[in-house]
Length: 252
Length: 195
Image: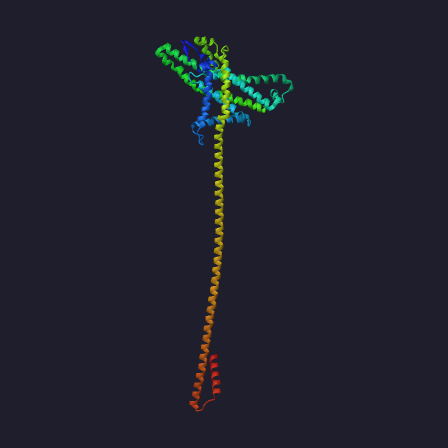
């Protein structure tokens, strides 16, 4: 977050740099990866410290850890079915990792790794490859009937099959762009309002401080909205993965 | 959800009207700056971190939660079973109590009926024994009365005979035949008794 002179550098916050000092620099460890490590640490820490009491009647932290567990577990079972148990650790990792990435990104000076299309794209490709492998493993070559729904007129095959393949392949695209665009747009707006605030205060003096309260109020409202988006986008990513896995397991 | 993205992007578009922002945007998005090798390296590290996180969660973190949840479910089930068993025991005890009470009631009824019957019998026996004794006493008394009467009658006969004999002797100076006197007295007594 830096207003260089009068120029609002709204995209500078997404510029990657090296992390973890010289050692990180030597292996091209980025500042995005630092936050990924932190996100993983927070998740593991929550499970470690939350579940440490192993209480029958849970305390706050344990209740949070258990709620998170049961929330994602029921999502897996509801969406995928009984087979969902096998994919639960993956969905849990995916959801909590993205959620933590979104939430930690809201802290000032923290890098938002979910705002990088390379990261969201990699996760989406991971999901789609997994889904395809699961479908092939369970149904073998029968999986390819997925692209031609039973009962459809044979004449329409040349039309339906390319459409189905296209929609299948567009899944990772929409999955990754949805998350990337939401996070990027939100953080650009944060940066623009914050920089605008500083510019007003710098240019208009005392009056500027008063006027700057406007963008400040906007940013406060935006923070509430972004908290919602952080949860929502992680949830959307996880539940779409579940739906794709359901298709892979049950083929429609 | 999905329509949120274009709307928000559109909302940020007017910002490009600010010359300052426009100048910054000219540099392009850092996310699409593929000349930066860090763009690739972060994905490699993402893969490493994500895989490690997955392994740690799958092998250690999630079973840790699951064991606590299982233990709780087991505990609750155990408590419920214990409560159900206790309720069963209580129900059995109540049923047993009711049965015992019914049994005792019936026994008491039998005992009361038996006692009443016995008392009736005894009273009857007592009454009949008393009756017999009274009857015997009455008979004895009657016998005594009869005996006394007969004795009295015998004495009267003797007295009457002697009186008659004495009277005849004094009046006539003759000693009457005792058989004749006795017959006359008996006749008179019989006539008196008939009269």
